[in-house]
Length: 414
Image (cartoon, rainbow, N blue to C red; front, side):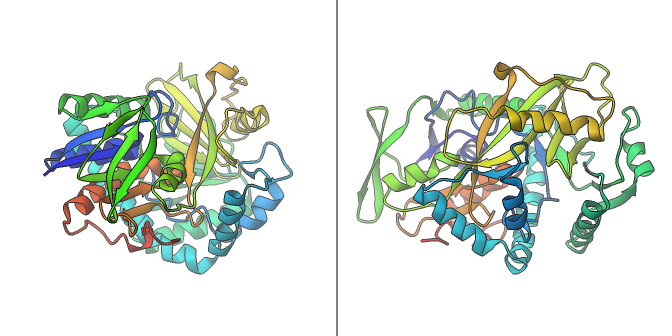
């Protein structure tokens, strides 16, 4: 087939390498970090066909403004005169309407369902990464949020997704060994969860065994072009040449795109997570705490709690108020769970690559004929990884695609 270079070794880059290698390509992955801390590692590990409402949804502007004055809130945009942020914010405002959200629902559903199917095959190929198909519970405490969630559940049903609206007692039956304090729940039986750390480790091991080169601590610093194609990359002081290139650098994608001479509107959305021991093994099903926007995932004898979306530049600040906000919300839903505020060394944070309209960028570049773009998956990198990788392989091979990706056009803002 030829040589392919993938820029970025998160779940999107690794999944792209998996399917390209299967299709006969000689694959090299260039990763600016050491693979230990990319955004995929601290992910909640949820596979979510239920998430067909994009981040740029109706009502998010009002909520965002209200939350800006609460340092523990789940969504925050740090005010800044950064022109990239201002441009992103204006596009976000334009996208946050019912018409755009409704148009996003079907493609988001389709790519999620494709990914969920592919995860079954991946388990067979690379080993056990804790894939658990018992759905996800959306837990709510207030009538107002309950109404919103029931409305989304109706939409989900109309999209053909397997979903049940439950009373407090019915919700408790699905989580029998841990007391719940909720008004009700929505059980998205179409959803699943897995252990992302295990997944990434197994995927890396599998790829290395198959001859894929993963070159760590190697940042792409220059992209040389010739006649509308990339002719070579300079990374870590070395030259790298391939027939096809894939941009899968997550929140670092705008920098790489700039070196290639085009723009990808994208802002990093910082999220935090931490783990606690599940000594009693009494957490049976993943949950999302609706009002708090906190995820709760049982993961190999532990529970991972994650949350917040802080739109800001890439930085190493840990905002302890946000972490406290996650910790304080948990006993409100699970009175028996009283986690302590974790030590700073035990807090993971990562930068989700957020597009202004909440849809990923996926497609061949209009600017460079031998470049495929796969980035901007926001909070759903793990959820959409295998489907994105398969679609990247189909794009690179010029095959017919497993689904319509027009709404995800990599060139929609160019």
